[in-house]
Picture 1 (cartoon, one colour):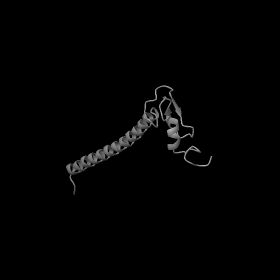
Picture 2 (cartoon, one colour; picture 1 turned 120 degrees about the vertical axis):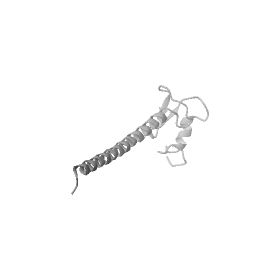
Picture 3 (tube, helix red, strand yellow; picture 1 turned 45 degrees about the vertical axis):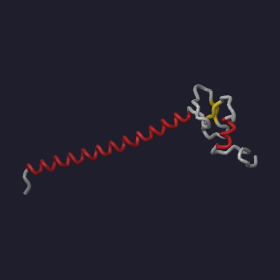
Length: 102
C-alpha cells in the first residue's frame, strides 16, 4: 500500500522528468533552426562576394554567371578577367570552355 506522500514524490519526479524531456526537445528544435539560419546567412554572404577573386560586390557591380549556376563575378578591370576564370570553373559547365564541343 502506497502512502499519499509516496504518490506526491512520484508525481514530482515524473513532472521533473517531463520538464527535462521538454527542455531537450526545445534545445534540439532551437539547434535545427539555428543551423538553418547559419546556412542561409553564409549563402547570403557568399552571394555578395565575387566567386573567383572573393572581392565584395557592393550595389550592382557584379554580374550573374551566364550558365545560371547562381554565382556572381565582379566587373573589376583586372587580369585574368573573373568571368573568364569562372567559365572554366562553373559547375554547370559553359560549352566550349572546358574543351567540350559547342
